[in-house]
Image (tube, rainbow, N blue to C red; front, side, top):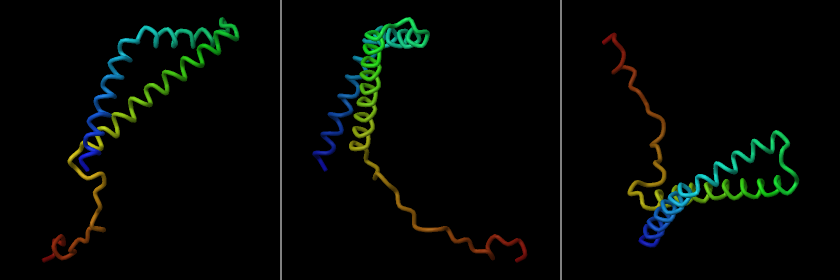
Length: 101
C-alpha cells in the first residue's frame, strides 16, 4: 500500500509538471488549432496536412497522459476506498410513514 501511495504522489507531481509545460507551450497549441482551420479551408498542401495531423496527435496524447497521471495519482493517494458497496435496497416500514395511526 505504501508503494501505491508513493507512486500516486509521483504521478500527481508528474501531471502537474506536464501541465505547467503545456501552459508554456500554449502558442504552439494555438498554432496547431489555427492550422487545423487552415486545413479545413484547403490552404495546406500534403506535407502541411501530415505535419498538422502529427501535431494534433501529439497534443491529444499529451493531454491524455496528463489526465491519466492525475486520475491515478489522486486515486492512489486518496484515503477513501475506491468503491463504496451498498447494503442493498432500503426497506421502508409502511406503518411508520402511514398517517393513519
